[in-house]
Image (cartoon, rainbow, N blue to C red; front, side, top):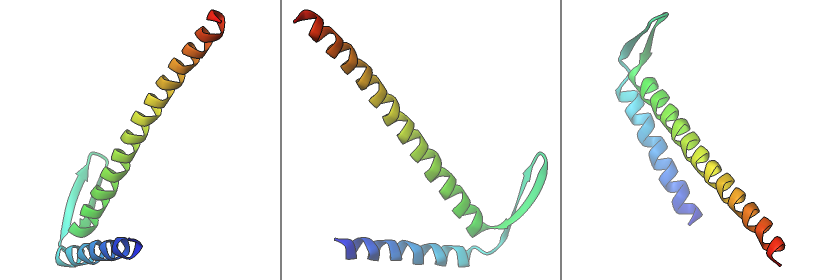
Amino acid sequence: MRLIAILVLLFFVAAGVVVGALNADLVGYDFAFARVSVPKGAALLAVLVLGWLLGGLTAWLGMSLRQRRLQRQRRKESGKTPAAA
């Protein structure tokens, strides 16, 4: 299983290198305060990493809030149980 994961990872790294090499043209971005020219491959990589980070942050926050809500419910339930006994 570990070998398959390593092979899949190597495949995607190789595919990324090929895409980056084939898209070496510069792309200009104009932010209101600065202009940047970067290769298409670097821009694709930056957007991919940004999306990965934002997706991970969203998933983490969603799970964190859910866990807090469950803990609050458990505390309320455990607080009611000893009083009833």
